Structures are given as C-alpha cells and as structure tokens.
Length: 170
Picture (tube, rainbow, N blue to C red):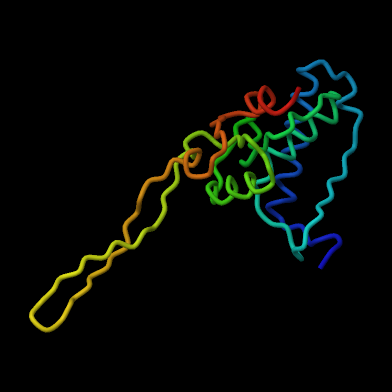
C-alpha cells in the first residue's frame, strides 16, 4: 500500500543515531546552524512497514548533505548501519543491494568494510553410470563471489561516515 509505512523500533533508533552523528559531522564541516535544526524523516515504499538499521548510513549522509548544503554525487549509493562512534556497521544482503543499485543505474555502492565479497550457494552434481542405472549425487557448495565482478558496479568498502562523505557528497 502506498503511503506512510509503519516504522519499526530498530529504524527509529537508527534515525536518532543518524541525526546525532550527522549534526556532529555537519558542525565539523563548518555548519554553525546544525544544532538549531529539527528533522522529520519520511519513507515512501510499497511496503506496509520499514524495519531494520541498514539505511542508517544513507540517512546520515542525506542529513549531512541537508545541513551543509553539499550535493550528492549522482550514481553513488551507500548501505550500512550508523553507529554513535561514526562507524559503519555490517548489514546483510549486500550482493542483492548491489544488484538493485545497478538495476537503477547507480555506478558505485559504498559498503561496510569486509562486505565486498559475498557467498553464493551453487548446486554441484556428479553422475555415476552403472550397469543399468545412472546415479546422480548433488550437493550445495558455498562459492565466494566478488560483488563488483558479479554485478558490474564499483564497490568501495568504508568503515566510517567521514569516508562515505568523501565519496558520496560533492
């Protein structure tokens, strides 16, 4: 359903952290008015609910851009949680998020440090011919995948929001 979705507790907590970190970074970047701002975050989605923390880094960047007047670098997307110490936390589904980013014509995705590789499950089968029958044995193997090569998108690992600002904002 279109409209305002239910926002889960984890997302609400992430919004609070994003705003707190963004105002600190904005002040560090010279925005004197960062303390005198209230913010309202809205989500447009086809889903009935928004839950989780994986948009924390994105919300932080958007808030920094707003507070400092800096523009976003088109084609750059970010995923990751935001922590109060300004670090970017690990999220799941980075391969799927990179595929979605590429589908929407993004050229670069910023991901939490250590997540530029993914693991895909592949089924490997072995056939054994016997006198009157063929026996096929299959097993699922975990195969490491380089997300950049798999998706055709530039993947940059970041560990903190200041690194994200360098890549994502002009």
